[in-house]
Length: 316
Length: 188
Picture 1: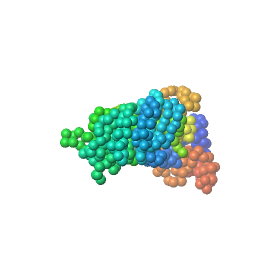
Picture 2: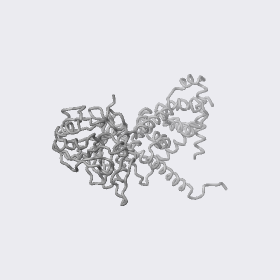
Picture 3: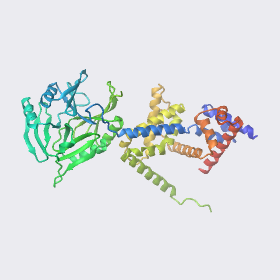
């Protein structure tokens, strides 16, 4: 009798596993409760599967917040991206800052892509029509040179407009300020003395303006895992200067009307960083999409109007 | 007189469980590394839900993976609006199942896919209790259950793997199911 039950149950289990009709077994009062359990067990997750998926998620978690460094020589986690109508800016940078063009890709949908090395930093330029998704505007950049006065003079000779003559500044720099023909501001500086902030910076650092520097640093921390490095606060609470770091890249901040630009941010997981940025208050421009070049990019715009190209480099 | 729970105890448990759930989700939003705790807590539920709608175990595993990858991406944007977190997960799972069938060129007969109603919630919770019982079975019985239902092996193959007779495997299978039925009886 017991043997018979064992065999009937086994037949019913075969039917359940094969998703065949098991109604006969379900009508059998002795078998039915066991067959119902068996039917539920068909949905029992495999331990191997659970372990495998957990490991995949854990791996993604360690990668997801990772901002990438050493993408290519000279590139840091954040690289300024300037949009200009023609090659005038590239010529200007070569003439004034002795920039070296390291890459030119012509004939793209949005014109020519150029990469230039200034000292130990990289800049990216897009010349030509603007993308329907993104449209960087002119921005402010802090650039360190050996001879501020000479570079400032070269800039004016190349058509730049002066925003401030070279002078020794109280914050430990000799600095002169200019605006190029495309509206970008260049804070040309060299460190004065061993305490100068300039020693912590590479040749070029994006300088972002905000009326709420504190709030913007909080955004960088939440969206991109930035760390706060320096915050100078005046007695009234105004922050004339602050600096945050995203991976190996510095971002400087000052209290002024926003002058938004575009920044390329290299990350391991653009999908997740895109969501983090939106959760931190950024506006969605485009979720992550694989580009023909092999990179995967998502686009957001922060509250200052800066556009962030959240990029995973092409796999090699 | 049989001691029962004091009036309102069930409600308080549900509330405590919701608060607990909310604390976990908020912790994972603040510290993404804690997402693995979210995964551990909900993987069986999501799999059980998806599995009911997927045509095969492989498809159910693919869809479940997709749901947790999406949940990880989208968790920063999850907002607590008084509905349980599971409703958000089930919504993603329902969409992923529908997408799967669309990709297969087979519109779901009952599109949009069903979200768990109260009855299905009970069914899912019953299954979760069952899965927990499986994990507490004696080792040999649990292995037979896994091989028969997860790996979908025949009794002959299970017997060969465990180096037992087919009769012994059928016996273990029966005992395992009886143990589970008794356990489920205790779960009410």
